Length: 42
Image (cartoon, rainbow, N blue to C red; front, side, top):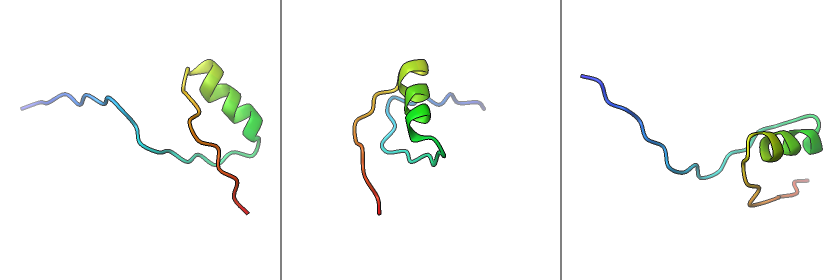
């Protein structure tokens, strides 16, 4: 028996990156993701 997974939404994702601006540009401009929250950590 095989079932298909249908994802409609992703809650929160944290992805560490050495160059935050470059990573943001990739995910927003290239992949079309939406930046909804921008947290500053110590």
